[in-house]
Length: 60
Image (cartoon, rainbow, N blue to C red; front, side, top):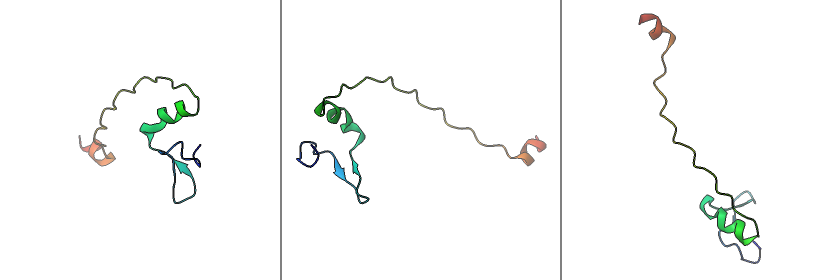
């Protein structure tokens, strides 16, 4: 399907591997006859706090 141009989102990269943008994966899956499962969205991560160095911990 890739070679026949039926999946235009899929292109060969400079290393000779086929790749496609993540947002086109559901369309590609449907085109090849796969069902697309709806996955729950992961909650956003909290930003990491500032690391405390050993010498700062001893001073506190």
